[in-house]
Image (tube, rainbow, N blue to C red; front, side, top):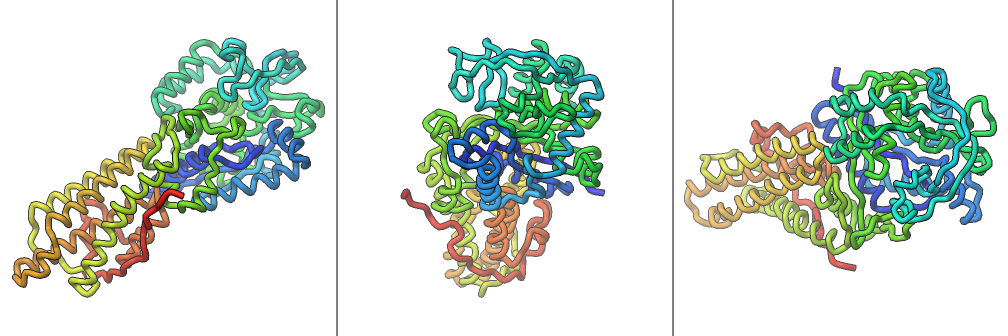
Length: 516
């Protein structure tokens, strides 16, 4: 049986259209899932929408719509972006309508209550609607939310609380032992430091009045609804059919080899502290890896719907295309730190690496095989130093790109793939096939065969290598050699099966982009 792996994006609020930060997380998780599948895992990728939020209610009121009509409309933008970015998502959870989620969140609450971890008490605190979170005064620089720069509102009411404090020792042990791995290590240090300072119990419900009647009811208390984060975090098991003990839940969570959450740095505490504690209270297995990315910024400032500087990924896709957007996010942006966006950066990276680099290489290979060998890849002849150098780069790229993705470093993986593009283009220049074709000498004809054979094999490896990052482009590159992913051998056998393949010249693989 193959190893099973679960991987998820977070589920965003649908109070506005998605921005480029959502697109970053989507393509990150998709590239990781495709990589896992490449190594032989049976992978389940899940995403969804967080719909039971006060932010959604307030945004609906401003739009003059019912909350139901508002979230039903806006969720289509997120599902549409997932489709436009060519994600291979296995299930999309909607927290306000999916019965498995609503019933699962209710059952999860009952299990936490049965373990003695839910209790009712009066509470006063400072609440940020944007974060859907209470803040201690010490966590508010100049009295403002560190995420939204707004002044939280004072709230006083009776709420249910979760005994987070009970799980201090168990959480610290899970984090420090590697039972829960937090990537990068700097985020692990932040989380363990937070836990070591001591854990206070957290509010897990809101009055129906303050929630405007929107949310999942607390079992046996019609005056309270679940706090949106408590409800939302359970989506990771509810989307697998936890409440029904579905085979998908058993396979991809309870018995999975890895359970991976991909998220932005602003919600690390919820996923690395609150969620594992909830799972412990409910008696369910913990996540194995928490992968944390930074923010997309513009002019150094965080992109945010609430801050009004969001970049519309749909507009970028319409203007520049799928390959350009996915490539910018995965090749240019750090997987773990903040990355500043500009259209000039998108255009420059795409034109340099794809149009002038990979696309040019594929075009040169197909043109020369068609021109010099009637479109059929020849068998190789004698091997020289340049051929050995290319072979070594093929092996290095495969090993180092694979290792980078095992560390969730998509930028490093693509940098190593670009190394092979550069070496392959340099190989052409060193060999000068156009001179070999004109010389008329038999030894040059054999060397030309070797050159075209090695070049076609390198392009085939590159078509396979870019697949997790640019799946449609990878398919198009392989198609120039009449190949599919299943036809591509490992680096140790990279020359096998390429001789005799008929080459077709593609339409412009990566047309150059110009500023708009």
